[in-house]
Length: 472
Image (cartoon, rainbow, N blue to C red; front, side, top):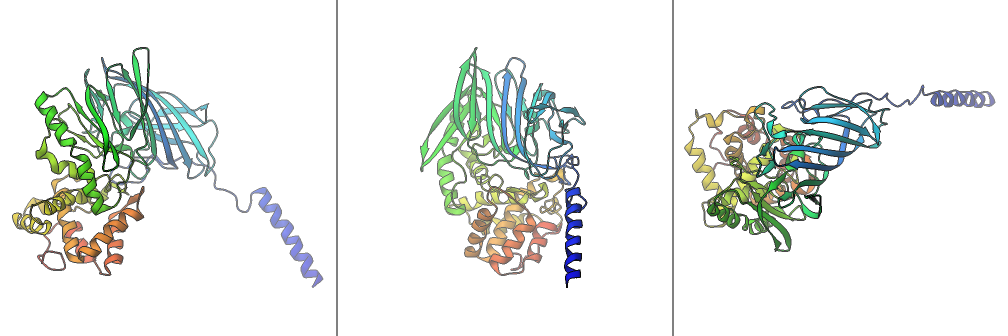
């Protein structure tokens, strides 16, 4: 017995020495963060090795030639030890500091900024990166995207799936959501509009800095800013603050149409709360730009619409406000999951019609189903995995909404309502995938739905007109 105790004690001494020397339990050596977050649709989107918690964006826009200069302070947490990491930025960087100390940096491609701190960042540590930059973002294209709209009268940073890198140093992917403080400095007399609430204005030297925050946790593409001459209206409706803004560049008749349309926003939001649960954010509203965008976008708390979109665009307001839940509150895990955004936002248009004197959503589903023969290109896109070039194909929207209604019909109203509210509650301020949604749908309904989701989301054949597919 004594001999065994002595051997055990000796082994304990050896083990303690091994741990002290790092031979046992040694932390992994720091390594570079990946140049992409891991989305196969856009392999260089986002960056690996860290999670952003907050962006402090401070930009100045010179309206005469639309030159932008600015500084972004990123507060992030290292997911593993980092010898270097990347940020997404299309502008020219002029200075980078990590935790207040100058860091080496270089552009490795048009959108990739590689940063090497003076010393590695330990796993789990919170750190700050301050990036200064300058350039003319309105002149910069990336592929077919040019998400910075600019002239001497108005400037707008807006696009999906990419826009952040044109005006701040970003981790440009919905999987890394963060809070924002946005300060935009523009000439006196111009209005600046962004997400959230106006926290303050400061005027000095012929320029005014507008500070917007309080938009909640946000994907980078859902952040925006606009500078121009706007007619602005703020108030409270249904207990929620709102701010709407309309560009003064279009003809007066179009301005009036836009103002009338945007004034309907609080009413739409209130209706959506009866279907989807509490409104996710502190404020709501919208902005009608002077640029002929050709689209509207669900920029968080304050969607942006093209000019002259009158009451005939009412369904667009329903769509973009529905995105405040589907897309903004719960964002896609990867861009292949876009059906969860566009299918549900389009479905909410049809549900609004159903409850306000229009056809039922099921009648709309069946009519649309009959409109397209089995050989129509409408059925060619796998909307549950459409591919990067088909993200915003009409099938993703309309077939996406058809899928939602078919699911509603298949599992019944009670289970459908429970499913939607549970999904939004469980994934709040986070991300979700089509696979996650299917799993929850099966749990809530108690049904095996693999055949249903395969037929509607992953097949290029017209779904059979069966009860199992929600069509009978």
